Length: 339
Image (cartoon, rainbow, N blue to C red; front, side, top):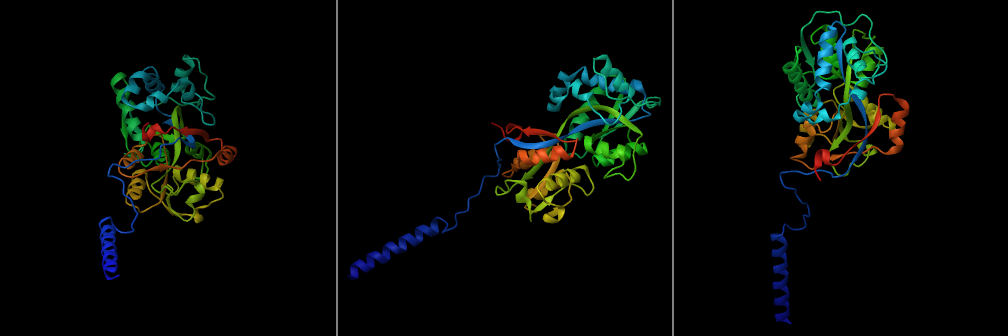
């Protein structure tokens, strides 16, 4: 009996040491430093990415800008993947805000009649155009820089791309004469023209140049337990700069799910700041509205497990019913995450 007790004690000690060597009962696992991401398609909505111009930009300058881009789409696509999403039909399809005469002239030559042309526009003398784009981590700046460089190199229209605070700031800079061209989200453009939401009174001193591509509403998280918009309740969520276009997109999406700003713990951050906060564990999720792939999300996915939250068909339908600015869209899994 004594021998049996000694054997039993020895076996028990062996098991204890074995458990200690294996890290005890802690079953947490850690991914490598390269990060990964959810590999599924993401259902969401999008708004249009539109270039607008001051009304006093000469007709010839806008004609040169538009024609140089749309007559050379293959060459532009070779420099930036967004070029593959451009089409003359989509470019000429904007309604609610009239087109600049220089753009309308080009589209009509190609067989597309725009909805309306701004009377009296195109009579200025500017020959060098500043182009308000967006933050350095967004698609506006990256693609806007490609367009500006290409147009400047292939035509007499000289364009310089500038970083900016995004759509609302671009409208304000355009109005103040700080830039002559600017990127805007389609919803923000309409807010400005009609004096809604972000704008206390109508801003009408601009006209449409072209709609270029769609900007997806992306809800980004590093928490695999956040699977739906409803899961954002009680979480720290970046919803864009206060009063920005992203902010109102976030409010719209939350509202479709019966949530308000008070139901989350909101922060108000740019794309890059949101990505940094996700990387550092300071927030649980972030709304980013930009053409996918977006640099801020791509960079995050190289270092952290990253997930995009889908919208379901019922709530997408609610968004489409309440706003003309949204379009149902899918972000394919290989946009960020490979095969």
